[in-house]
Length: 152
Image (cartoon, rainbow, N blue to C red; front, side, top):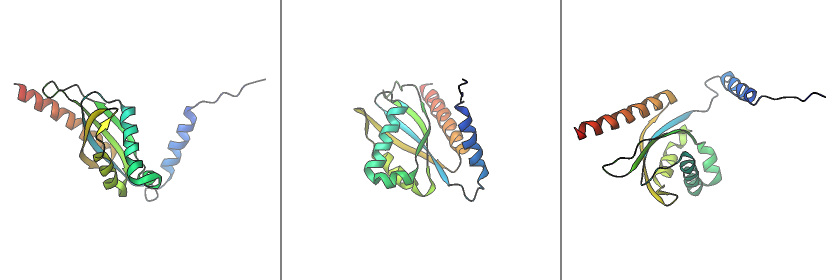
């Protein structure tokens, strides 16, 4: 008796292939929100995702949260700032193009994650993920060079 062995990666190929079959006019439009997290301690990606989801659900309910279609694309933690004693991180959040203001409002409502005070500041909104990643890279480089210039 032979056992059927399935590869988990095959499903990803079919999903990606299906997404490219749709013409651009039928695909859902997205926006990418580049944001900065300033916190008292280091915040894990999972904690941040849970808090963003809680904020969206508490403000807009199940229907509003599902229509916003949020997804945390990436979150990068920087080193702790010695001058202020705060941790800084930069992330990219994908959402529906017509729900950007609602997602920004939900991000503004987040004040703590697991009893650590945080502040989330939206840096910029991009229409493509390529532009959003460029923004995060330039933001990380600018903040490190600015800090280096101030210390010298």
